[in-house]
Image (tube, rainbow, N blue to C red; front, side, top):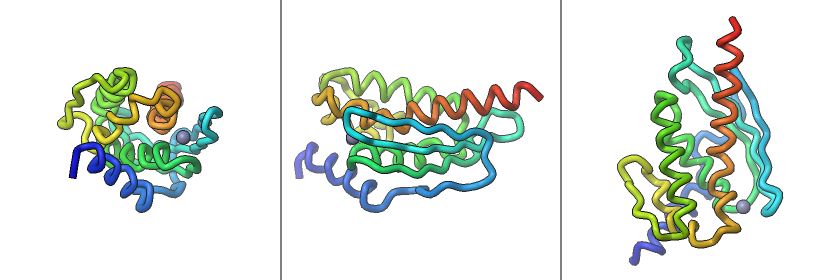
Length: 151
Ligand code: ZN
């Protein structure tokens, strides 16, 4: 199996069996993001740890293409229970990869299953599909931190 079809399998696997899908309580912030060019939508909630440094739970409900849904499933795997700084570092790396037009050299240590999207980076119209859930989690974490900062 070549790399491209292996990556496709990873995306389809997450699409068919999404990890962590479904909205859960309690949560500190909820956001709703859409990707109008493709019609993808996601509602995403985060629950932060007491000290605001760790994402204790991510829950979401989404609809849209296989790329957007697989990306949300991988987000759950990569970010659930992890320090926010790690998640944001992964996000930066992922944004770089998606803007590499397929020329990037993905670091699978940081990216995990997100390397499967390196082929998607060749199609500018799909980049927003892949990034949707990740932009939503960034927004949600920032809102949750603002909330807890006010206390
Ligand atoms: Zn899409």
